[in-house]
Amino acid sequence: MPKYVIEREVPGAGKMTPEELKNISQTSCGVLRNMGPDIQWVHSYVTGDKIYCIYNAPDEEMIREHARQGASLQTL
Image (cartoon, rainbow, N blue to C red; front, top):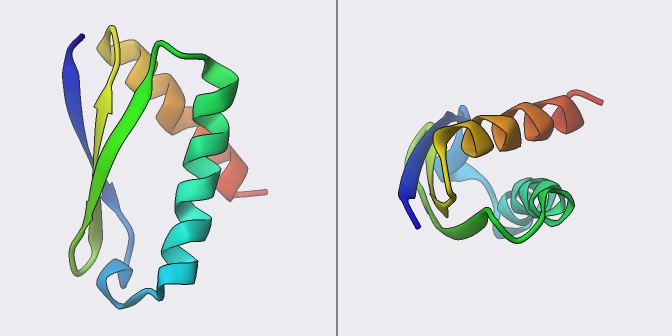
């Protein structure tokens, strides 16, 4: 299965507490559960103002759909 790296702009990500990072990841994991087993989160790397996430997915469109769904949940 193809592997993708997603770069997300998250101002101050490197200064977030473990609890704050956990809350972000829980939103993403909730979207993954709803999308089914074809897309899988592998690992994330946190830098100053960005988070890099590694995913396995059959195609780029599935990654984009995950991003759309995650963004809509974070704005609620």
